[in-house]
Image: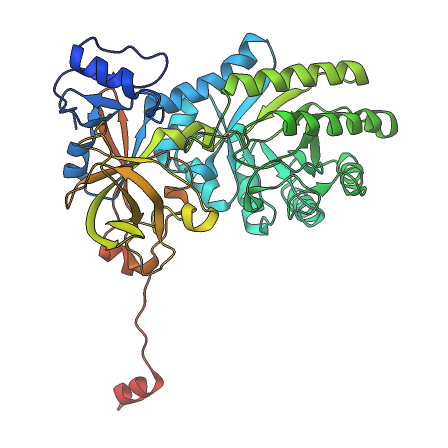
Length: 479
């Protein structure tokens, strides 16, 4: 689908040029601060409609239906290059691995490969998707706190580049599989450094009381390292940690680096082990609302490099290759979900509800994490708010609320509502609750829309169902 826009697009994001059409220029300058969620190529065309990647959002909704996930491909590319650029400019060996749990489809993994990223997968399904996408297996890292034997066998047979080992049970299984296959595999040991990042409890992972990894404080990590370096099937590249998600400062990453490198210096002396790789994970935050204050990818990377350089020099250990694992920060603000508005309800003196044709079946984060979002009407994204409404989903749950108390122009029936920053953990956590089909996914770039995931149908919902035939019916059939 080609762009159906009429005239120039106005990009409401620093670094993008403003058009100098008098009326629009004034409107955009006056509202730029308020609409900082208009990232990348997301903007407003001369017809007054929201555009994504040069494609009119209203036309997208007409052609592909709603709910609809739409991704600004150019912004994903820029985010990926932003992380890589700082490493390259400082001459540091590194891998930027896309954490595919944020959004995993064949098209997305092909885009990640095109941008020269590595890949982080956490299940056999994500690994299978990577293989189907043609992603280089040698640049694929296999995570997970409870990998099955079948998944490990699959990964060994695929030639996965690195196993991020989480526990002693996994070490035992991987040893057995490598022995059977006469294979040698690269591994990182996942360590919990005892760092509590400032984030939601459900996405906190680096503290001592966590289901993930070998504990650094109680000797588990050292025992795992002793076991691994003495095993001829394992090439121990180094260590991995992940302290949480949606983090807006570098303090936690730097503290984790300090604790780990101090321990690495100790292991150099006691175990003659020198790490080749230090993987500090991901968790870099993005802006969902004005309450969020993310920092640029380059700032995270610059601070991490500087601290690792300082620490390795002071502890007399070799500078390792640095790996990081951005997921949400690559795709989160590049995604927009388009909904169609429907019924309204007003509780006088309390609240107005505006329902849409999606909800927790396509974005469960508000119900699960109390996540907050911003949204506009796609046909009037710059219009002054006239009312405050709460956006209700269509699922049969009182907790199916996408946005509370959203300022909007008064919405008519069947208008298109665009919810920003839904690119991470929307599609990947989508479900069929209430037997609702999952939405389609569109990639928009340079004025062209590409369907990369088709919309599910009602027939799709039944494809794995089998009829139940009772014993009585079976006996009757025999007679």
